[in-house]
Length: 214
Ligand SMILES: Nc1ncc2ncn(CCCCCNC(=O)c3cc(-c4ccc(F)cc4)cc(O)c3O)c2n1
Ligand SMILES: [Mg+2]
Image 1 (cartoon, rainbow, N blue to C red):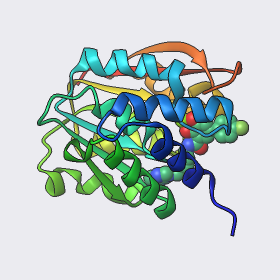
Image 2: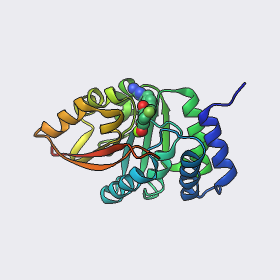
Image 3: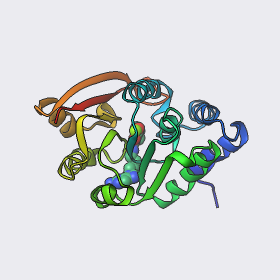
Image 4: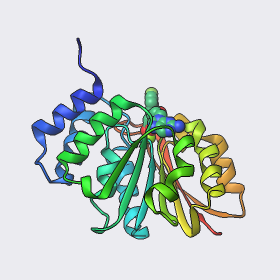
């Protein structure tokens, strides 16, 4: 039977990237998605904005919602200090299976906990399961209509502290209008839009960075 797009993306990583070199994994995926087959990774252009936010926050604990093939997981993990933790939630077992291999190829297993399951089910378990007191950075890249309910759930679970940063992908395309309205109008957040493009295209998209004010 025909391979899947995630399987072909993993093949490109195993063919072109160096084991243990996260930058070569990121570059191999970008090359593949730009020149061979588009895939819904945050990509290189928005990825540079992601890098700058991760470097600025220098997080000890990161939550990623929506792993897909692990591109942004590797992109974030490569910038984290040795004992920092990245918890990434993936709903789709086939995506999770590929992401584990991409993360392993990059040599990032130590810093990454990949959890298979729905965000709504797992967010309430994070404190006890991972001994997390607060999330320093949340990267939202899962179902766009889940961004708002999951943000409210993260607040209700007491997972944010003064200065915690939410960074949301695709706020323009496919779009997360209700989420944008919420973080931009709430007194509890200081929001900033980083204009960019949908991965590997000329279509406008961007990232919204929202600092929790407590
Ligand atoms: N609740 C829960 N918990 C955990 C979970 N893990 C995964 N999921 C389900 C998420 C499924 C993938 C989400 N990502 C996207 O849909 C996405 C799409 C495009 C795109 C597509 C077609 C176009 F023509 C143009 C742009 C581009 C992007 O950058 C995207 O991120 C979960 N859900
Ligand atoms: Mg995305």
